[in-house]
Image (tube, rainbow, N blue to C red; front, side):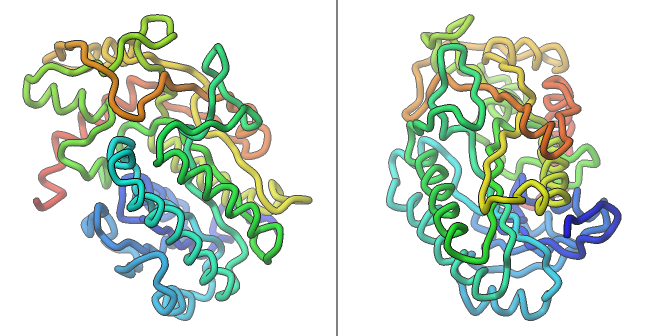
Length: 339
């Protein structure tokens, strides 16, 4: 039976729930009356983000630990699988670590989920798996062509989960994230990394330190030569997870796996992002041009009709809203995170 809002979903297990996205999803669940149960090894996640939630510290492939979680929380409705290594340049230099952490451990995790009777898996996938067409927009049926080890781990996991779901009592909804920005509007959680590698984090760091912002790559086939992305407020992303959980059974009627894009449907170049940032930042940031980073690509933006029709979800926040919340979070981060 399809779950409805208002408490009919009792609990959700969130792997990587002490990280940036997982913790924001946990807050959105709690606000909706759903108990988030958190599993995180705290390699990059933060204990401060899981206060007030049931928390288990450990690895996603730890069978006895997963047995303990399901034994203590037998009313878990679904698993939201956010745990992953995510830094593209790191994946280029350490592909073994990325395939082990993202693929091998996820395979073991699914084995233990099935053994514990879990039948619903919401997978945090990535738009980085696409091979964009000439206009750089992508729909769910666009060609797959990941260009980095990180992106390939996401593509491999999607196919692996789909194959398993076709043979086992498991259904999988893969949410292909575009580029999350911002923070929980209530500032309960945000980017935990002090010096993040992604573009908005680098802009915030430049605003804090006065160091020039590096535009990495100015020769892409885009309208101004810089990379293009679909920047999605992390709270919109969290609400998309709620919509997916609440409509999970209906969306997967007649099939065992499916993928859905989560984005705004609008592409923003790095130069446009810089202009948006400087419209809300005081002082403004000065930029310098730099070469592409290993594994980078021109980028893409989402076609989101499927999310609207199947989930009843559309992004509500603007790029400027995401930047403003990222700056608000940066001002309070050190009061919340003790490092």
